[in-house]
Length: 396
Ligand code: FDA
Image 1 (cartoon, rainbow, N blue to C red):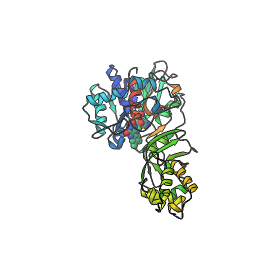
Image 2: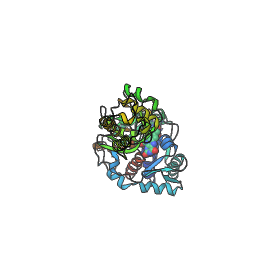
Image 3: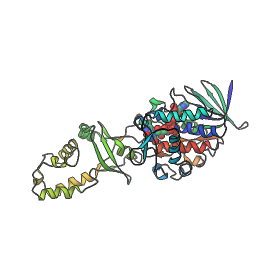
Image 4: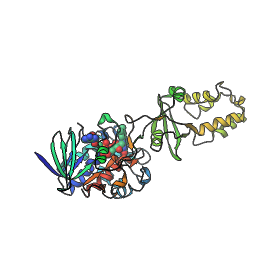
C-alpha cells in the first residue's frame, strides 16, 4: 500500500521537526521518516545534555558558508527571539550561560518534548527506525516516491533534513549529500568542524602531560580571533577556543594563541627583573598561568631552568613573544567522531535562500546542517536549523 503525504521530511532532528510544525500549521498532511530509534538524538546530547538551543546575538556574521549572505533571509524572518518565545510558551526554564548562549535549566529532553508535542498536536506522523532505500521523482505527476522498510510513501514536497556527518554512532549519514548528488545538486567541500585539533608528534610529546589543563586565551586562525578557553588533551587542543578556531581552519593553516591576552608579559617580567627578582622563570609564570603549563612551557624555552635575573633581556623578549603568539600547525582535527558539525554541504547556489527549495528540482528542499551554512559554537547551529526549517515550512 502506498501512503501519500503533502509533505514528507527525511530526518526527525531540529530542522525537520521545526519544518513539520510550520507545514502542519498550514494544514498540510506531514510525515517524518528517520532511521534512528530515538527522536532528536543530537538535541538530547547537545550542550552537555542541557541544549544550547539558540544564541541571542545570532546573525549572518556568525556563520561560515561559501555564500555569506545566504542565511540572512531565514535568520531575519525567524530570529532567536521567536524560538525563545516558543520555549517560554512551553514553560521551559532557561538561562544565559555566557555570550548570549541560552541553555535549558534542566534536561535537553524538554526541547525534544516541545517539538514532539507541537508535532502531535498538528497530527504530524513521525516514523522512527525507517530505512529509506530509494527516492525517485515523477515529472508527470510532480511527486516523489520514497521506498522504505515501512512501505512506499509519495509526496508533493520532499524535505531533506538529515544533518551532517558528525557522530555516526548517533545515526549521522551522508544521506542528504547523496540525495543532492542524485538530483544533480553540487556539494561544497565537507570537513569536520567545531572539533579539537591534533598536534604534530613533537608537540604531542611536549604537551601530552598537560591533558586537562585549561587556559583563557585569544586564539586566531586566518585573521579571525576568539577569546575563550583552550583545553589540552592527550593529543592536541580542545575547549571552546579550539572548537571555534576549527571552523575557520584549513589543513596547513597556523593557529596562533595569545596565552596572556590581558597583559604584556614582557613588561611584567622586565619589571620583575629590574626589582631584582631571583625566582625561577617557571614559578613566576605560574603566577599568571596554570602551574603545569608554566613549568612545561618555560622548560621548553629555558631547558636549564634559569633564574629570571640570569636571563638576558633579549631571551626574555623572545620567550614573551612565544607567550603572546604561540604558533601551532595542527596535523588535523579529531574528526567526525568528535566534531559537533560538518562544515560545508549542499551548495547554496542550488537553493532559494527564502524557501530552501532546490532551483533545479521543484518540490525538493534542503534544511538544517546538510546545507552549506555552519554556525559558530554557542547555539548558532540550532538557530540555523530552526530558521531554515521555519522558512521551508512556510511553503512546502
Ligand atoms: P540533526 O543531526 O539534528 O538531525 C538529522 C536527523 O536525520 C537525525 O535524526 C538522523 O537520525 C536522521 N538521519 C540521518 N541519516 C538518515 C538516513 N539515512 N535515513 C533516515 N534518517 C536519517 N548546536 C547548537 O546550536 N547548540 C548546541 O548545544 C550543540 N551541541 C552539540 C553537541 C554535540 C555533541 C554535537 C554532535 C552537535 C551539537 N550541536 C549543537 C550541533 C547541532 O546538534 C546540529 O547542528 C543540529 O542538530 C543540526 O540539526 P539538523 O536537524 O540539521 O540535523
